[in-house]
Length: 316
Image (cartoon, rainbow, N blue to C red; front, top):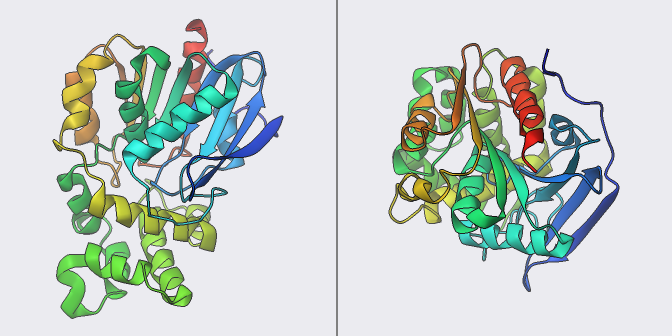
């Protein structure tokens, strides 16, 4: 039977930072086999940062596992920095790291916002991509952002009520701008308070069954501040032109092996976006997990992702 469980915990064999401009310094690490097939893990959010668990999707004997905390996220500095922070800059950072590490071609593995960034990078640099493993598809369209800000209350009314309650009633007509005013406040306490509520809201809606561990992790200060500030910034200022650019440009990558893994009951990134991507990219292997939501840690999604990395061992 194909493997479907995480690999054991593994430490990086190399870690460092790279100054990508005068403002941003990006953290990166490598784990697994230094002579293995390179794979780039792209975390979600934007702004969520990577964790040690993310190395465990990959066979460390086969893969050279590269992980990067994107601008403003995790161990990259400055934390939560929105200046000079765009999708185009993140694509450049991924390419800068590839050259820095001397990698010719690599797989891309990304979920949620990581799927967005993987698509944007692959469509810009298709010649550098061996394959794409994508989960919880997000295409950065207004309909998806409005769903997150308002319509998730259809299925998670109590989580949305707590999210909205942080904002005075007279400002709730534009939750994004109201949150941004607080997330960009000069008062750190105001920033942290808003960031925690935003991040816990997302964490509360991210799994099919309640996950106290996920909700607790969502409220941690570093994670919450990076996620909420960068996410709100991207929702306000970094949508694609045209809005459906990632779908329009799929023709640039249809020759690249790909797997799309999507939870049927993903509330954060509903299945309709994955369905549209697959219709534009019928060559991709499309797997809907019938008993899962958004989180990559849910059993069915985790198993499908590990199975995809096992399958991709044939692409070198």
